[in-house]
Length: 187
Image (cartoon, rainbow, N blue to C red; front, side):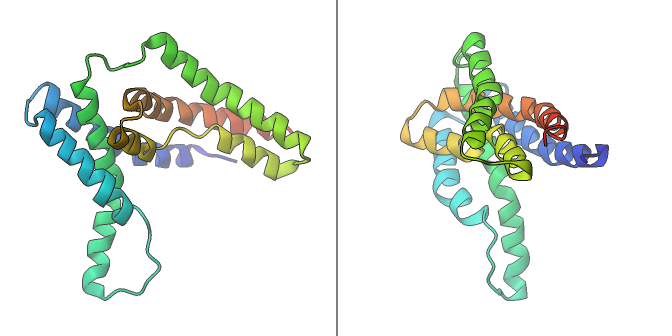
């Protein structure tokens, strides 16, 4: 069963990411530290350097001098991605780039219809028990930060994905705990 200590660990891991998002947003919108060109350079750094090299765990034996450096860099990759998203959001006219109705529709599709479709498909192919519950919960996981970074780099509706990532992460914790509790009763 999920306890309050588990929820507090998730919140403790998420708060620094939103702090990085806030710093990115504030550094463009309020403090005017970065220009549009500099923001594009930060996004390219994150897309081509930080995420590919620093967010994965390497299972290679490294000299002890490099081990700590790689660990520090691996923890910074996700924070840099959220900072980049904050820079992008600050350049937009509205935080909800697609509007509140489309944002709400996207959240309903992601967190209600997605798991329902997964449940129907999984039951149709014969999944039962823990595997069925895992498939449904996995369908309700929020959009990844990486999808925003690559959408921004390749010009593929980054405004919509930034909304999906930011609000999806906020909404997902209580919803996933709720899914977990409800799915405990399904055998």
